[in-house]
Image 1: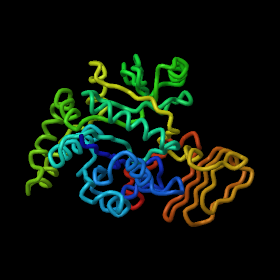
Image 2 (image 1 turned 90 degrees about the vertical axis):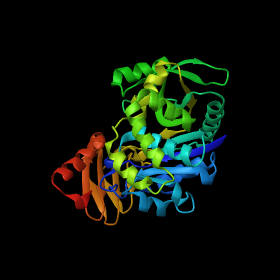
Image 3 (image 1 turned 135 degrees about the vertical axis):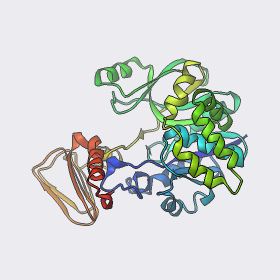
Image 4 (image 1 turned 60 degrees about the vertical axis):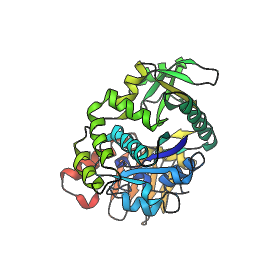
Length: 358
């Protein structure tokens, strides 16, 4: 059976403003100091999937830069450009339809483009086990991450009984919990973090969309019927913006789990979604005062802070637990415990019509 790698790379990464912008979001940034995040994701996928079968789904706005950034790693024809963002159910369904109509059915391995993985070998092993399982069973498979602390920032998966191969049935998906609930999840040993990584046959996910989100499937079918014809792009641009926004978790995973059709493979791979500036200490070593200093940055009597300089010297004195980011056209300062709210700055700029800063 064919194997396909699918990397979802259409997000805006607004929590990393002002470094992250609409045309150059988080996945097109080098936050680790090694390579662009999308290229690191492609290289991880290449350990499991042949280069010719790796696809990237991104936005039309980002597609030209994505093509340049991944040159030599991903074939340009395998970069699928969404006319607009319609959440993960449509993103995944669109790619599944592309694969089924143009290349033939097979197992899809789906990951986000902007996650950090410390132990790539562990993730590779989990993917290989998931691929074999997906070939043998008509099940939806996800990767569950062993929680290292009681996080309130991640969704959780409740695990049921396990097989001899260490694969669990999924009993349910849980939203981001409060601190007390997260601690209970951690102590119970019955929960894993929801990674947003999935493995299944292209035909199977389309069947599930047809069953549980028939309106979304109907629109994807219209697009699929136009594939390999001169009208493909016209139909895509006509239909895609009308599709209902819905995540793959709500559209398919939750109802499928209630029917016993979802499996989870636990994985301890040093994962982090690096969702905001306060997570930079996952990627970079802290100094003796717990600071992460990147670029031309110098601090005195500063603790627990992140200071990022793009070009100009950035200095700080006598402040703790702050984030300071400098780029060519903007400086952002916020309390470290408000890092998740940086997107509110972007929202405010949108309202003010400051498009040049977006």
